[in-house]
Image (cartoon, rainbow, N blue to C red):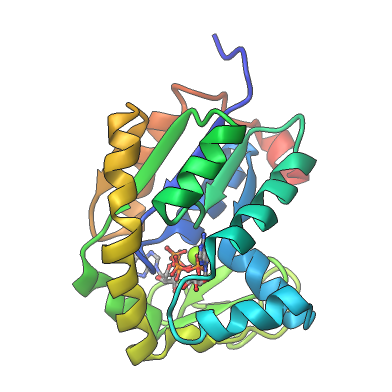
Length: 225
Ligand code: G5P
Ligand code: MG
């Protein structure tokens, strides 16, 4: 029934729960998760030339130029040869989607359709573990020990681009530059949208959908993912 590896995209506005839902997908289906934002933040942490350049855009809530992103992501995808994968945060513009489809066939695009009002409240309470991309929220899923990652015990940080004025710019850019992608993937017959305000209600629907495309991992396998 499941004959091939799955190539999936998860998209949605900033703060819609892409990272949160991706973490659950990785756990349940063993897919490789590739988050463009996490990749950029690792480059920034390591003070690479690309990271320093990208930081100027990220801190203003602007998008990093298409050619930088396309190169970064295609390089990473080239390394994942025998795993199903889940792209989070890429593509984010129509030219990025076109560059991706020139190289690879995408099987499915899952869109998290979460209202902007719900999102704004979430981001100011977000803390992340920069090494893994694990994401917490002080109101909703706080870490077991305040300020520390549950798995490694390392320090959590707040993202510079979660300041209220930057969040507003990110949402505006989503509306202008990323939302047109919904039409792009809908026209290609790839788009599935999940509407809601709570990840705990959205995720079971995502899980049921993915289970028609890829086998879930067993408990034994999930420990080694
Ligand atoms: P990112 O890193 O891709 P965004 O803006 O797309 O950033 P973000 O902010 O990472 O998306 P998310 O992953 O959709 O959000 O959401 P999340 O982190 O899982 O959840 C948000 C918060 O809500 C968390 O605290 C979580 O715990 C909480 N939460 C989740 N579900 C619930 C719930 O049901 N209830 C409650 N109360 N809370 C919940 O990109 C960052 C920047 O990098 C650049 C851009 O500058 C971008 O702004 N960039 C690119 N530029 C150009 N092209 C690309 N392809 C780029 N990719 C990244
Ligand atoms: Mg994210």
